[in-house]
Length: 169
Image (tube, rainbow, N blue to C red):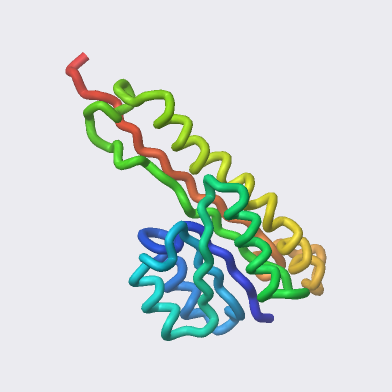
């Protein structure tokens, strides 16, 4: 059985490593590597140029319209096969892993709201938009009692890195 996979935050780090790993799988039919700026994702573009199963999709997980457009684009390509695996990997730490004005004690409310929107709300909206495609894939799986990613699954990664200041107390 061939599978269709969607990965958010696919242009670097864990997301890019997942794209590389899935590209080695003979059962992969389509992989949708989603990121905010696919035009600038040089490594991802290079990998996609060597594997016709990899499709670069623009998606900003903090923008519901972008998410909806990405889901529609994926749906056009998978048709009645649906999506077997959605990996919500996109996230932000705002680069605030060191002490300073954007540390845990120094960050402004807007920083926390942006991080929460990307890391917590984003995966919920992405999952909601792709749920019909996951249901479609799940219904095609012959053994309805078995739970596995060939049927349909959502995997969520979590990212947050706002450090506490070290002041000796």
